[in-house]
Length: 419
Image (tube, rainbow, N blue to C red; front, side):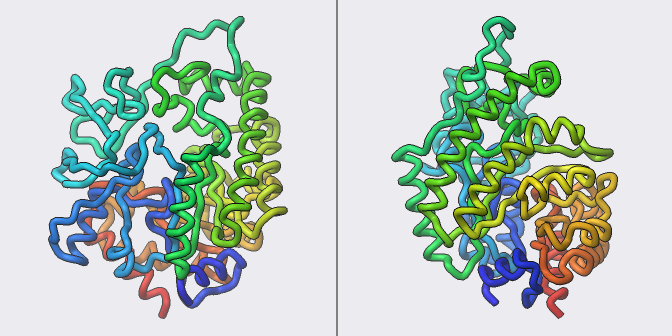
């Protein structure tokens, strides 16, 4: 099988010739640029190549064609046109991280020194605007800076929380045209598309690090409080956002057709390490109706499978995710309460493809021994890959300090699992 066939079998809950694998196809299944750099140098030698940072918020590195050819990777993906900082992936320039990694960043990636020795970064690279995120000295990725304007209850306008949503324009379609050609040139690989504007209440997006002067409710705590105290406001934001997303989805389905196999719909987290982040009632009131509307458009108009990313314990929400029309759960955080992979596979394995869960990125991959990494990967593949319905990925992105030895142990386990 090639990668596209392998992914198709996995999504259809049929056993492929070996487990399907994704590293680098999305903003939640990637590898930090420092780790990509180490892996690339080991496999290809020190050629002086600088890895591109394709997702600057989490500083994820590109898995290019040359590196991918040496890895058991089956899936490629298309992000939104602009990053979380409003930057576009072009005009690449050299940059050096705190750990000494030499890489390439987009031309609009502009930082200035922060008081703690770290860096501030700016929306659309505009250093005359207030900084929208901060990387501490010695850090590996950015954290959003809250720029909440004073809230006047009498003047709250849902339009202010909709500034970032709009219909696809000519620049967007030119971007997607180039990406469509890229998919066509890589027809032997699985294809994943990140759907713009389909994540309702994604807390990484609420502070709007891509906007120079965000309005509305942009403080993280204030937003979560509002899901209880200002439900009418939140529902109005979601209703208008959904109407825009529905039109954009129809455009993208018509444009990409069967080239796409997987649509990443949302990165909103509904779980924590110890339990769900939200009550079932709140999910059913605030989120599920909009999830169902968008998933139904995809299922009526295409063969695409829909992908929900939610960290933490989401076991109690799984029946509702399935009823809302989601086909794929990521990341399968097996270290969280109630997320035992055996039970998840037994109870939901007929309805859901598990994407991730192959190795614990909180403990085992960064801090375990190579033998421990190898054993856990083999165990997870044995549990989750039976009868298909599994795509191997780590539990969220592989972090910057992860050792080369542990990454190689993970790759060896994937290869050995094929028999």
